[in-house]
Every structure is written in C-alpha cells, then in structure tokens.
Length: 146
Image (cartoon, rainbow, N blue to C red; front, top):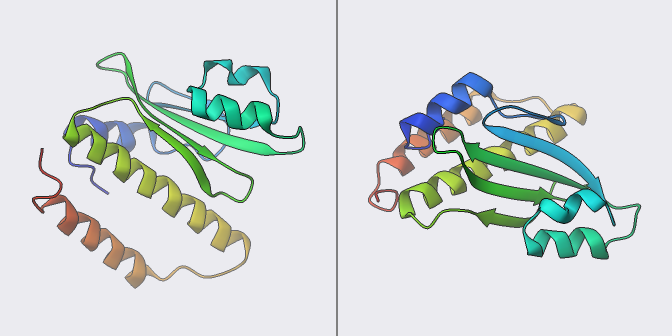
C-alpha cells in the first residue's frame, strides 16, 4: 500500500505495522486500562476517555512518529472491539493529513483482517487486490494532492 509520501512508505516497508504491544522508531503500540496513569502522555481527549473509564475497559493506543523529523505524526485509540474511538493528527499540512488518514485505513483493515482470521473467515485474494487498486487510484486523484 502506498501513502503518497516516499519516506512514510519506506518506514512501513522497513518496520511494518505492529499488531502486539511494542515499539520501534516509527510507531508504538500500548494497551491501557481505565484509570491507567500512563495516559498522562496522551492527548487530552484520549486522556479523558481513559481516566473516565472503568478499570475493566481496555484501550489500544497506536502512535506513529516521523523519525527523520523527530516528531509525532498521529495517535489512534481503539476500544476492546477494535473500533476507532479517538484520533489525533499532529500535522496541519494537507499532504501529511492524508498520510494520517491512510494510516488510519491501514490500521482498520489490519484489525478487520485479524478479526476475520480469528473467526475462521477465509480471505479472498481478489478482494484484497481490488482494495489495493482502489487505494492506488485514490492516491492519484486531486483529492490526495497537497
């Protein structure tokens, strides 16, 4: 999949997308529970959700970074069901906002693939190939241009 920014594409190729807690130069994935003190470093909207939730609730937080600029790119928060509940983009440039949206789509697709695999639903190569072609076509449209 292509995001439209060569540096980010290279980071995805090099590090992939984490599916279990861990970190590398490009991303960090953590699980937090309601009231978890580690939420202090999250954006305020996410901090409120974690601190206001009961201890039984689990959140998955996925941070993306641009190591070559030494800055944050985006943070996504998912609930136990894998549904996106909060997102924060740390950029105002339209091109990088589109990269963040693409990363969000990649994360949601990965979560859906894992969920389907755990339920024993087979993946069709044609469907995946069609989605990849749609993604490529989308990046060539004027909507994606900066």
